[in-house]
Image (cartoon, rainbow, N blue to C red):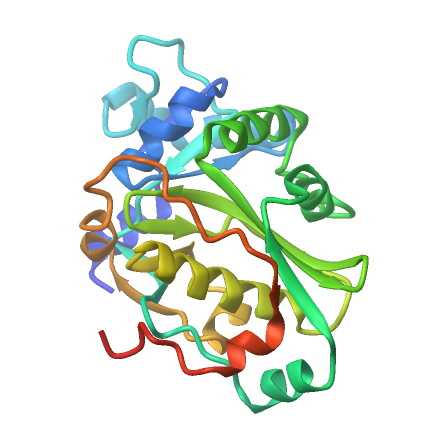
Length: 253
């Protein structure tokens, strides 16, 4: 990675002291993703690390004209870790897992539960109470979605993210069964492809993502998917997970 790209990956493009639904949507429209500080200690650490950039203007304050604050940092690294349209995959172990279990998936049935499960027993707890409130508002507006994976009536995995233009993001996920969250990622990526998404943004490399087809691409490829500036609505029908064993019709497009 070039020095300039490395520096860009290690510095936020903006900071903010508070959060609103409108501010999140504005960030999504730019292709930014947001990381909340998990408490005052982390916010003070961000102020020490990025304060010089805010003072010299190389790191923006959002919304413009607001008092500088470091409760939230906004990022736009030169590389993004994504699952491109048609590239979500199941390895042999995941395919066997689906054949041996009678699981099914839903969309947006228990968004609030998924959100709280994603922050359960996580330290540092970056999904703060404020974040939960704003994410719930964005869900009601159509910008935030959840994928739920069920074994009968038991919720065994889930993820939540945002959807805009022709892109969906994965913000966080959880599982109660081994590899179940990977199944959620593939299900969400395949459903978003049906809705017209060109990629599923995981933001930064995670091994779970790599195992289901995610790879790093230039961020410009992500920015090109944001043209519609409107919520993307995923198909919301209940599906047996064996549907993922069928060939993906979007593959190779």
